[in-house]
Length: 108
Image 1: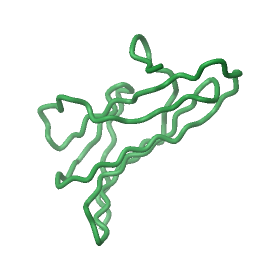
Image 2 (image 1 turned 180 degrees about the vertical axis):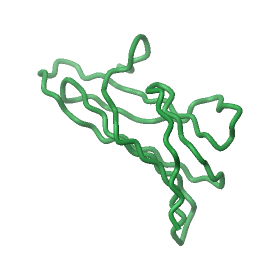
Image 3 (image 1 turned 120 degrees about the vertical axis):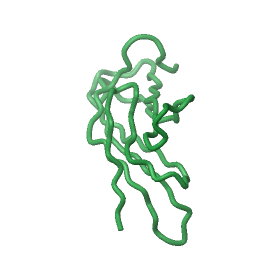
């Protein structure tokens, strides 16, 4: 079941975003983080928010959580990752559901 009403479960941290310009391409934006949940079995992903905002260099993402059914209570950590082929040189990425904005690293 997708969680859509009320607060989204999980405490997330360690958000990182970077552009991968390594040959042979294509250029890819990558975003990662970790989310802790009160029980195993949660699934978490990042999805592009539509519509995007008025600042085109800030990619807006939503954190989507699918809850488990009938699992014991044990704290677990899930890695969350988002990748997008893009020609846009994003400066920031905002995870709307968490109210977090991350600067995008542009490694040389």
